[in-house]
Structure formats: structure tokens, C-alpha cells
Amino acid sequence: MPELPEVETIRLDLCAVLPKTPIKEIEVFYPRVLPYDSLEDFASRVQNHSIVKIERRGKYLLFLLSSREYLVVHLRMTGQLLCFLEPPLAPLRYLSVRITFSSREVLLFLDQRKFGTMYLCKALETCKGVSSLGIEPFDLTPLQLESMLSRRTPVKAILLDQRRIAGLGNIYADEILYAAGIHPRRCGDSLTAREIKYLHARIQEVMTEALKRKGTTIRDYRTGEGKQGSYQNHLLVYGRAKAPCVRCETPISKEKIGGRGSHFCPSCQR
DNA sequence: AGTAGGACCTGGTGGC
DNA sequence: TGCCACCAGGTCCTAC
Image 1 (cartoon, chains in turn cyan, blue, yellow):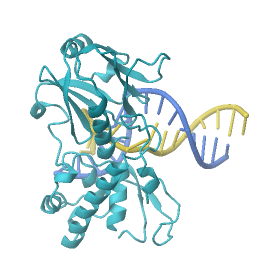
Image 2: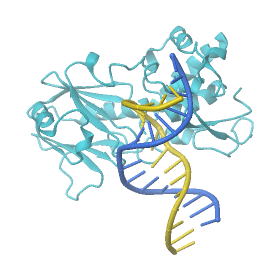
Image 3: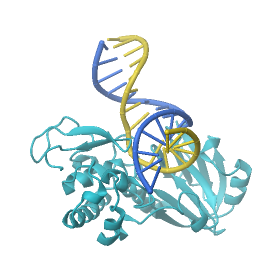
Image 4: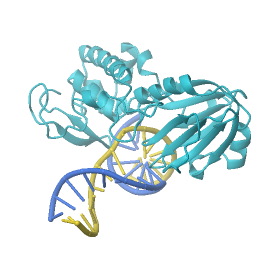
């Protein structure tokens, strides 16, 4: 689920509410949430340390601990992070991890599909997943985009490749390409300089708007405050297969491109 | 270097 | 209504 605007929204919300007090206890209810660390090692390295800062790279959340280690979290498809002042009384479905602070607040990691992961790392440069991430969309220059596109690969696959651009996912890739009027199957090296410049601007525009609206809630995504985002009300192609294009009324197509369901207007996107 | 497919999971939806 | 195949916002791995 969560792409850059969603993860950034969660980060901002958690920055406002997460306590600065030490972590008293960390309970793991689904062991595979920790792909690299043993439960004991993980708990002992987190316990008694506080969260100093929350950063983000691509779709990863990075909790800097007072031990100088990073607690790295990836929400994958259905992960949620919610902070409560008091631990909820009723047992929660899909609870993967519960972090309890010495001031009694709790941070819950809920994950219906259980794809989400958590691990510790000493330095981001050597951190699995994070170290190979590409450029943040907001830092991307038109020139960098041009060099990424100079290959015989569908432009959609290039936008989704986290080693190139970090943070774009399936929803926003479809929306960006629609806004840019570019067919997702076009090879990167077929784009003109003018198209690349326009595409670059649409990346910035869609990401800015999605962030402003605190992300897209299709089903599971919630902000750090447990609320829905609202960009789903502004989607023009994603999830609109067979519905009329808002510009030309041609039915929106849906095809598998680069292994992902891709929505586009066969008339507006060439 | 590329891409296609399967794996990891659970649950909602659409078709019959 | 009931069942089942298929699909889902992400990433990693293997095989071609």
C-alpha cells in the first residue's frame, strides 16, 4: 500500500505524537516481521533506548534510536503504525508488534497481510534495502530522469524501480503517466526531451498533491493519526478500469505491464 | 541487463 | 446464497 506520500504522512504524524521516553518493552507477535534479527537480539537492542528522530527514505521509515542504531520499518502492502496514549483494551486483529514506552504510550504495528518488516541497522549505507535506494522524487532533476529513461524498458517499470527513484508505487506511477500523457508501455528511450521535462514536472505535481491530501486510502492505509487519506478522491485512472476518461471519455484500460496492473487512457496516453 | 514468475499472506470481489 | 478463482498499494529471489 503505502507509497512515499503515505509513508511521509505517517512519519509527520508520528513525529508529533511519539514520546521521547525510553522504550520499556517490545513484543513481537509475528516472528517473521523480523527477517534478519533474532527476537532476543532485537528486543535487547531496542529496549531502554528512546526514539530520537524519525526519518524516511523511499517507502522506508527510519527510527533513529538513542543507541545510534536505526530501527527500520517497511509497511509493504497493509502495514499500519498507530500510536495510543493508553494500550487499547480489546485485542487487536493483525497485531505484529507492540512497542510500549516508559510513559505508557504504545506504538502498534498492525499488518493484515504480514508482509511488513522491521530490523535494526547501525548505518544506512550498509542497511539492506535502504542502501540501494535511488533518488527521492523531490530531489530528482530533469537531467537525472533523462539518464534513467535512456534504456529500452517500459517507462512504467523505470518509474517503479526503487533503485532509480525511491518512493513511487503503482498508484502514483499510473497517475503520473496519465497526467503526463505518456503510455506506460512506451520505452524510456523513446521519450522526447519535451516529454521528459513534462513527465518530471508531473512527478513533482502528483507527489505534492498526494502529500497535501495525506495519501491515498484504497482500503487499509491510515495516517499516523489513524485517519484515511483523501487522494483516492482525486485519482483519474487508478482503479477506474472501464470507466470513462475524464478528458475524452474513452474507457480506461487496464493491462499488466512490468508485472503490475496498469491503468491508462488508450486515447490520451501515446 | 532485462523481465517473467513465484513467494510471502489475508481478505474482498466478481462471476458462475 | 455459496463457492472459488482471482486480484490487491511491495519487494526479493530465481530462472531464463
